[in-house]
Length: 459
Image (cartoon, rainbow, N blue to C red; front, side):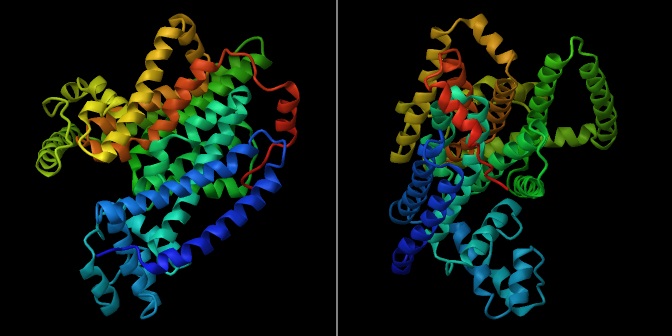
């Protein structure tokens, strides 16, 4: 049964008009003519919206279903209770449904993801958005794409400020990569993760590096952290310490500029190190060896199960080889896992149209990486990395994230979605290293305009 109806097509132009009306007003206010970011704003929003519509049409008419419509199905069930019982609707949204409530009980009986917190959270956000658009799939998709764009845009603004001579390449890395455009725009978990990641790194940058305190940024940071906890907590676990590490390294550079000796920096480092020691010591008492072993065995069982299911379903499985449920054995798959996340599927491994599309993105990233390795002096490249806190953060996050995703997915179709939070960091890392030492393309006046007209996207 088709989830996209005639009403979707009738309502879609109205909501697109409203979204673009807001977007043009925002651009005119914060990025007027002559601002170096101005030319990227509407095109970046447009490709996100086009991606959301395209992936919805593909899943509806080509696949006749999929995860995005499963999320939407739950959103429909939640919102169907509102007219009969607002209390039941609210209890479902807050995941506190009472089985003794007849309306809530009926809704619960129709759901199969209620106890799957990440999936159900995605459905609840879809339901909340649906309350403003009659719970129509295509309209929800374009609104989700707009939210995802906000996160990507804040991510772009932060690093465009840090690399004012590389704005075009930062835009390519963050705003115009095909994977995040397609898989990070519709009603998917990853769309909300992109929103949360972009907002998180931007808020920490403004609050801690620029030291500009704003209540709105604190609230946005809190929402971003909560979203990642509910949807994909491992991203927060990997990213948050690295973002603060980057902030610490920035402080170190600033202190070295203001003081001939670095005593204040070493005092701060000592305090942080001692604090972390006691935190780790306290946590270690709660994490037994049995718990660690159980986690490793779970990873092993999940690998065997996912690989088996992928082989039976559509043949788009990949295998990193067998490993034992021990830390050393799992870590032995580190580089194969990183490779599969960033550079596979290879073109000849594609078994479907969508995999063929994904393989070209992988091929492009592989060729860029090889070009970086052969065209740049290795010692100068290493120096550029270790002297740039942003590149250090990007490299560490990409390696850790790619390992976790690669060692736990075992299906190219799922991998194409799961890897997209890492793509902006990887592309930013590669493109900055490739073009960082090139002379500025824009005249000094353009940089002056950027500083003078620097927008405050969250005020």
